[in-house]
Image: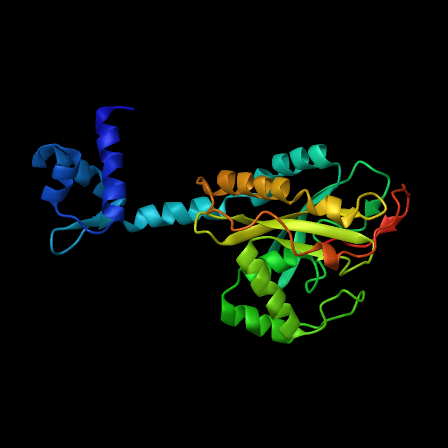
Length: 280
């Protein structure tokens, strides 16, 4: 990188801290004021820097527009897919990616398991929003007023005895998910299907998607599936890094110590050609 380009780019993080005058820019770069002025004028011509009426400089509107355009053009599915395939190869189970749109949580990618049992989930199909792990992750990340308003509007079908029955219980579950940074669906939608998931976060730390691993308990027990949580979270973190361009914040807890008592009854391992309903 040429010295001129390097110096010009070094101005941007300085101005991200707040407006600065010519002398401050020159001092930070370690150059003469005439050199700093030439660089600032070039950035100003491209809309990346704006000169205020008090003669201080700040970041320009063009820079924000470019950043927004870049974010809008990011395809989380395209970025995530190689990671989902790799996770599937490591564990053998069905892997999903989902997003929250228009008050629904939708699957946008799926990698099928290696065993004969198949999930009925389909890309583009809404998930069971009150029980699915991916839904819990995405809704838990909403601002509290929006989270509470949505919970009050939802219906709460009792798919199984483990389904969440009402809005207060759902809000408590979302708060727990928000605190621990991961979610499960242990027989909440179908008694024989278990799921563990983690969020994919953007540069601002907000969840832009959620991914999960699902398996029927005729193939793997709930305990064995929960043992994959560190791998699931590492995969979600890797997707987050590729999507946002920076490491996500540390997550508080990788060990689901409190869940074994909540597991649905595990069945002997056996293979089946039957289809199962949507996982979490």
